[in-house]
Image (cartoon, rainbow, N blue to C red; front, side, top):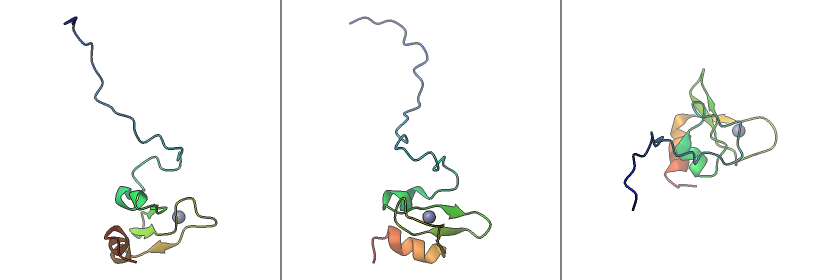
Length: 75
Ligand SMILES: [Zn+2]
């Protein structure tokens, strides 16, 4: 084993490279995205798109309460 200095091992693990350039980050709810939803957040209203990932057409924003139901696995 070679105990050399590990030069700045960047602590960035880029796993968010899933071919969704639209999901830069801040305006998407990760928990909903994990649930297979579009998860785009309409910032002015705080509503979230609950349509399936990569759905056709415009986003449909729902209340946070409904989003919680989706995250909770209810449907
Ligand atoms: Zn959407």
